[in-house]
Image (cartoon, rainbow, N blue to C red; front, side, top):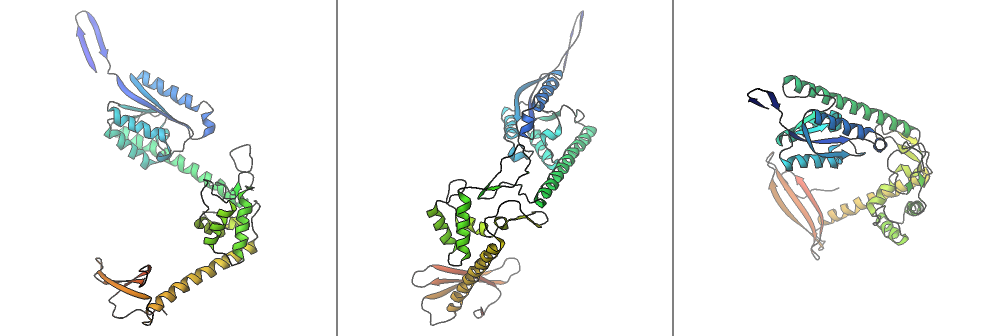
Amino acid sequence: MCIGFAQDVPLVVISKIMKGIIYCRVSSHDQVQGTSLENQQSACQNYAKDRNIEVSQVFIERGESATTANRPELLRALEYCHDKKDIEAFIVWKIDRFSRKAEDHYALQTQLNRYGTRLHSVTEEMINDGAMGKMMEAVFAGVAQLENDTRKLRCTSGMSGAVRNGLYVWDPKFGYKRAKRESRRITLPDVQDEITAPLLRKGMLLYAQGNTSISELEKLGEEWGLRSRTGKTFIKQRWSQVLADKFYAGIVTDPWSFEEYPGRHEPLITMEEFEKIQAVKNHFAKHKQARIKNILNSLLDSSSPALAATNSQEVNQRDGTNIIHTTIVRTRSVNILVAASSKAPCTKPLSLN
């Protein structure tokens, strides 16, 4: 602030013009269609005008979550402050527009401080420099965190209630799609996709017979034209997930309590068929373990010329014990089959029986 004096001229106060930016956000697409953003921006513009702040840029976040990583306009605003070097004011309508988590709030504040930028809240003007201002800022940040946690708790409670009612409230499982609805709230069960659901059912029933491996299912799915939602091959890892998921047998699981409820959606297979699939999966898993064990045991048989072992030793830096690494290879093709480690001073081969 500069004060000028002149003879027979009244005192003139010349206020310094400060540069700043405005950041507005709403948390749902429904609010975007209303007046919330307009009201926020208008209030921030009036705040800047009353305090002689020249607004260089306005950043508007439409329908994004409060998570910093999911807010591209906030990231652009921070980058703008970093690049311009002369932005002194970061104006928001309310602190919870800036962040709803206390730790995120202070992390963002620290970042702004490095750029020489100070946070301004239109509705919470007490967050200024000084001990009282810092205390009030902590209070407001804590209130924003409380509101966010309360909202999340209500959302989780509502989702749990929907699950107990047999609804799957997340993105539809592969093979299903959302039923048509008039609002964002899920009140109807997902319905089977006309293209992918029959192919999934075909593969699951084929696997339940016990003669087809998951790797073979991947190849068959490719022949049938089964593709993921991104148009890629439905790989065996995805088949493994589908085969182990009770949702396809008509069960919805609460991820918080792990309780299971009868789903209102139409299942692809019966529970009896699901149990057959699990029995086949266990059989294949035991067969694989037995095959590996036989390979290891054959190493102990000196009459087997096809296998050989190499040992290496290192010292564990934590406790000083020796770690023996045994690598089993085919002597003819030099392909590594199994690598095993044992932690101990070992003088003879370990028995695997």
